[in-house]
Length: 143
Image (tube, rainbow, N blue to C red; front, side, top):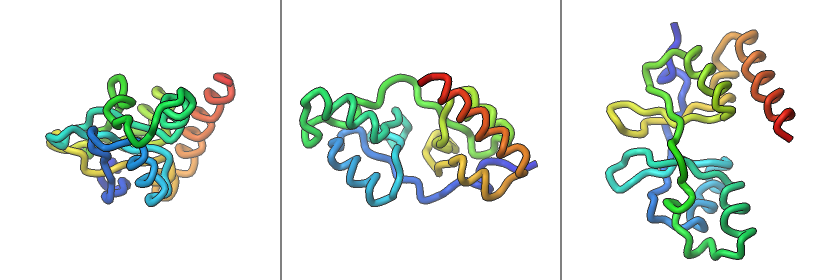
């Protein structure tokens, strides 16, 4: 049985919670991604921030991205998956929470990120089709 650590991207980048949203946006551009985990000074996951969060919860409200800290937008309980969890468990979690990327944790530390794309490149075509179909169907119903 395949586990998350086999498919994850190990060059995961975590935005420190005291960094500004401008710095987070620059890192997203550099990594060509739309979301990043936010970590505390202890290296533990404290949330997740998306490019949409920056636009809607900062810029659209007239706030300055050079002053707002990542910790201010890292709201709620972040979803994550253990590095030794099965890929099927990871897919179930993505479907349940309607997310395309999950931080991967081992020994209470961020060790990677797993995305829908990582799974698609490495897993059963039928199961990947189900994942994309379930997430896309629920996204369309929400709009």
